[in-house]
Image 1 (cartoon, helix red, strand yellow):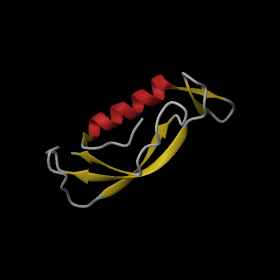
Image 2 (cartoon, helix red, strand yellow):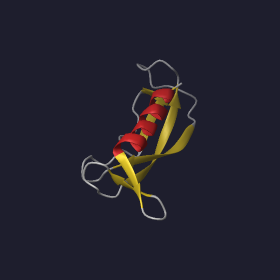
Image 3 (cartoon, one colour):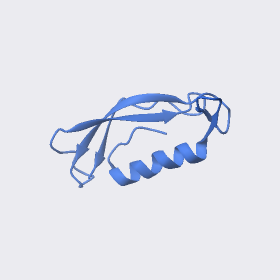
Image 4 (tube, one colour):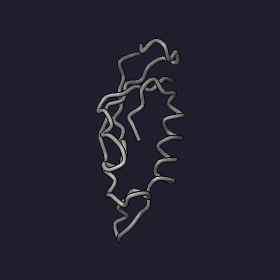
Length: 88
């Protein structure tokens, strides 16, 4: 999974949920997540996500941000960026 860039917020939430449900398997007593394809342990990037106005062509907003945990497989995917934006 990658950090959202000019993505509607609800689409980001659906994509993150789908990644966790479809690309990951939980193993062990503490529920560690592993990639369904290669069995590498899933890593997390703590990304700062800016909240922008709904217009995807103009990355403008109030300057508000939130921190999002972006899960990814370090074997199958490139590391997600530490800054992104969603449009609401």
